[in-house]
Image 1 (tube, rainbow, N blue to C red):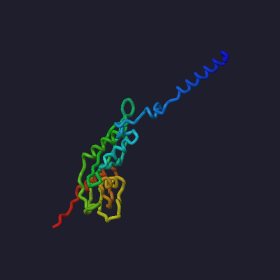
Image 2: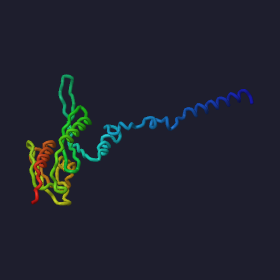
Image 3: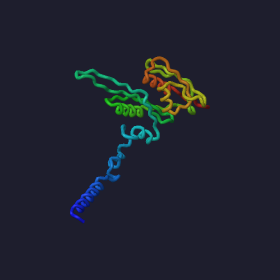
Image 4: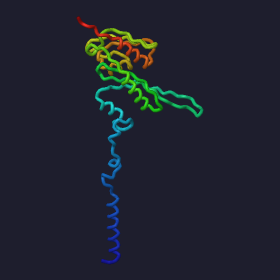
Length: 202
C-alpha cells in the first residue's frame, strides 16, 4: 500500500470517529434533560398545574365566575390589577364565595379561592333540592328560588348555576331580579340559602 493510500485510509477513519462521536444518545436530548419536577404539580402555568391541583383534592369544586381588570392612572402611566370572583363547594351542601385581588390573574384566583373556602355555609337541603321557596337579597339584587322535582335540573343563570353545582343542588328553579352584578347575585343567592329551614316532624 502506497503512502498516499495510507493517508486517505487514515483520514476516512478519523471522519467516522468524529461522526460517531457527534451522535447524541437519547439521554442527552432536551426532552430527557428537562424532566418535570414533582414540586411543580399544582403550580399554574405548569402542565397539569391548576386544574390537576383541583382534581387531586377530590372534595372541593371551584368555579371562576368573573375576572375583572382594573387600571389606576399614576404619574408614570397606568398600573393594571385584576380581581377574581370564585365559588367553592364540596358538592354536599357546603358552599362559599370569595373575591381576590392581585397584579396577576392567577394570584387573584388563588386568593379568591382561599376566601371562598373560609366563608363556607351549610345549606339545609331536602334530597338534591331545597325544602321550600325562598328569596335572597343583597344590595340591589334579589334571587327567588323554588324546589323542583327529580329530572328538572338547575334552572338558573350563570353565577347561580355555578353556586348550585358547587353546593350539590341538582333540581331547583331560580329567577334573578334587580342588579345583575355577578358578585351581588351570588351573595343574594347565599342569603337565600341561609334562610332555608327544615321542618321538624312530630
